[in-house]
Image (cartoon, rainbow, N blue to C red; front, side, top):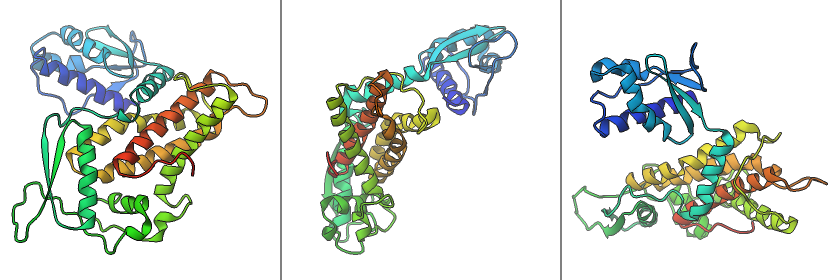
Length: 338
């Protein structure tokens, strides 16, 4: 967790306290976190309680006591200790704990990971013209809306219909995408934002790194291949400490974990903004973050499978699960072999 991430977490804790009626203050625009000073402890510290004490009409120590449980319950935080007049000293959870928790959640929920209740019970009316891209985008939006508890109803615009509510009118495709085949055609129509003109070309069929669709589908197929190979070697995925590898290092694995953690937010944004292109671009980011990990999943040479190999396989399978679920929502096949 970076200082910027932690700053947002502290701000969320303040927001929770305000929403619960425990504090009566205006939310600060930003919260500063830094290394603990003399007498402090943990990984980071913040003076937010001291800043809010006067506007809250309470002592800084009391404000810190109010914020502490909200902050301690946040993901990625192991403990919060109050020192001095009200400094909040934060100890972060170990990266291995964060990895195991996130990966375990993805593998437990499967392709339903990221589904939420942002649109619970809502009926979303999508009014589209009679045009192939509009139909494809509307179908994808309907599937994504369902992941957030909503239900989409698709209606067609009638001639001279000047109502604007619920209208989804993406820029039409310049030509018929059908010759690309179902999967590449779906990607060509869904990957660009609705206000951008889709590119209908054979580039979507090229099996090389320059093709984002190929990278996403190939990444999923590689994960499935690694899982089959692991079974032959007698081990299975188990969430835990992946260790650091020469191929990825901690930073590389953190990039993948960050992408996986962002998946629920991406699905919510894609559903609420009727923008399946956000999901498509997110899948490319997940695939690109996954590739550097793959060579380190299986033991090499005489090396025996260890806990780190099981954990790396679990992380790879979690990424593969997100890719499979995302492709399905876009109406695209996630191949076992490619």
